[in-house]
Image (cartoon, rainbow, N blue to C red; front, side, top):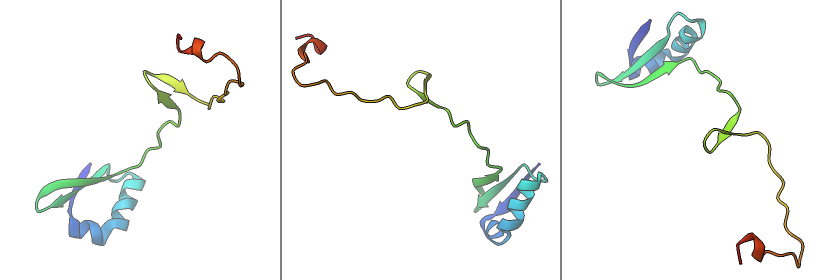
Length: 80
């Protein structure tokens, strides 16, 4: 079910509207400004904490950065 409310109503009834969303009696509440839809109140859903890097690669832990020791061949790394 969806409810519509003006900005004034939303401001004065915010606690009530949040409770309605929490208990499931309303799925979303759309906020109107001068008769136009500008925002909505919905239940916040936690997202999966796994991050993806690039084209779907899993990024799960930091890789250590190792600086080469002095005198090692850096030229070979860059094709010199």
